[in-house]
Image (tube, rainbow, N blue to C red; front, top):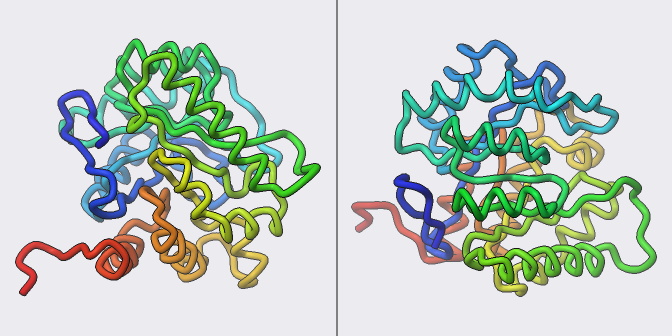
Length: 276
């Protein structure tokens, strides 16, 4: 069970949880970045209305070829947005998408509940997460898409080591969420290979997350632009749920909620309130 600071709980295995993306950046790969704070807050509230169980707020693009921004810039972008969301939606579960410890600390002060890090779990971020009692999403990534053996073997080895290190440091296992990093340090074929083997990720015994939303692999398969990859994303979402994945990180929350409800009814025997 995921427990956040005064924001309730998420029961792992009961259903699939939807993490809605909020990009506070001008250069998002999918063209959905919103740098103006008021507009970003309005969009975040809309993502909650659409059914997001978690909001993932990021202020640095991680698209291929992106330009890194200093921590000061990231903080200036994200803190006003987090503070405003927290004021408007006090019970929302807020995740901060960063790999910088200064940003994590500032985000925690602004109301963030959990960390989503694209570079595994560096020691300084783990220390801060433990200090703040923040659950973490630990993602596999690497600078070059090169693997000596099977890509999933390396992904699982990396994630298992990071999870074990977090647990040894005192983090509850149910607060260590593992993400195989679709689209990060992987070719399109690597991504498909990972998606084919998601049950191996689930078998590690930790909560899991998959983020395929609008990714380039879907574009290569369908020939569609990022904002027209809803159905391709839906296919990966349903298959991920079938494999036992706990959280899906997406741009298109309303459509994903429908996919998750139907898939959960089949896979997890979930039923909506008032079902007869």
